[in-house]
Length: 312
Length: 273
Picture 1: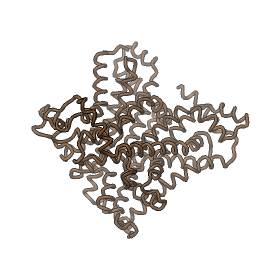
Picture 2: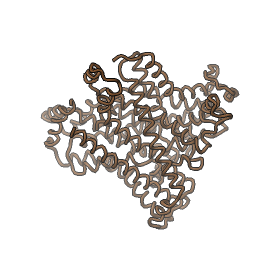
Picture 3: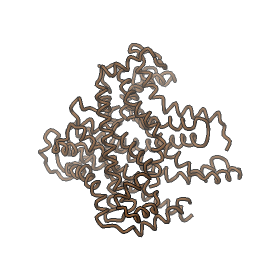
Picture 4: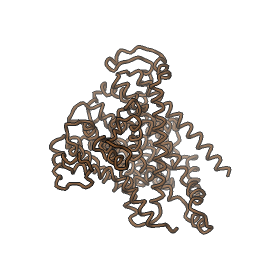
């Protein structure tokens, strides 16, 4: 409600801008537009052009135009189907687990208690740690013989000997997910925590006086306030998970048996292990299309939700 | 509201344990003598007499050089990102112009492009510009990915500056550029700092470009140097963990100090935007 009263005069100011020369916006925007064209736009076009050729990394100058062959072969390649499946599972678990954990952490850290500032700062440690360092320490913790997780599995009676987490097809993806979720859940918690500051305390107090239990307070008061933040987190973490490279590459390089081979890892392997630039580019373009589709669905769903909320 | 405070304290401690333990474990591993790393039951406490590992991390690896390179890349990325982002952020917030929607869309698109996808074409560009195997090349590539985020965050902050302040400056005869630099920038300083931190971290952590564009050992960044130890058996584990800890700790400590601004910046700019 606050934001509405503040934003109204601002919107009016935007409709009637202060008089300025036509060259001002052009001058302000030109450098960044040029920069992004050179370092993002041009490479993207190049990547698309590569995707309709057969090109080897060994002789990038020799390109044969093959039309949509790369795409056609990917569509019918069972290994690529696995890539799509792994990407979907990885992204979905990243989103659900890191937002779930982040929400739990944010609710725990909200409100006043002693040492709150320190606790809030400490919980963000994983977000501040470099991904390569995170990969290194988790590779050590998932080590078959000496790793802590292996010791833990034996201690709890799940295994007799060492567990070869990263070499075992059914454990590798969970191990990578544990690492990734550990790294990103603090970001969700920080964003949700900030959103929780916007929960009107009078409403919550009124609900308490009315004798509402904690769950219904959450549903009626807390959730509507933080929902936009959670929605945005869903989009951000989805898109980030779709392009995540460092942790997965360093821990498994997509193995064992392709169980951790996401779109980005697959694209990198095709380019730099199989030296097949054309096919790699096609994988990249498909990944981009997936990301765009996800984003469009997100915006479609959120406008619909906004309309529904407006009607209420 | 009344809480069961013991249960809450316990839950908070578990949470902090989960968040901080891997880093603690890195420290413990670095401070455990090689022969005891492979004990049947893990040693959960550091062996303080092993502190010499940290000196060895500097003498036995090129850590010092890697850190300097990472610092150059991170600072370069930060400075360039801010320089490029302030004016378009202002334009997106305050000015009306053709292609505004297109610019916003382009900025958002970059969030969807995986770095790994652009490695090959960027390699090509850098070869032509003689920027391959240079730290400047890394700075330019990283900035392409930080500029959109920084611009978006700064736009959010500028949205919050009351336009009456600008109009007053305009009546006093200030030019548009003058208004941005003398009036708007000081007002959004905290967000500017937050955006700078985000760009800095991106440069400090970046791995794919640093791995593929740099072939000269002396130009390696810390992320690539550290990654070179993964799965490699010739360097003792406790030395590797010491290198990792030295690379991680400044980032984490720095972040703890500026965290307040980063959160404020991200939430005014990113989330509400």
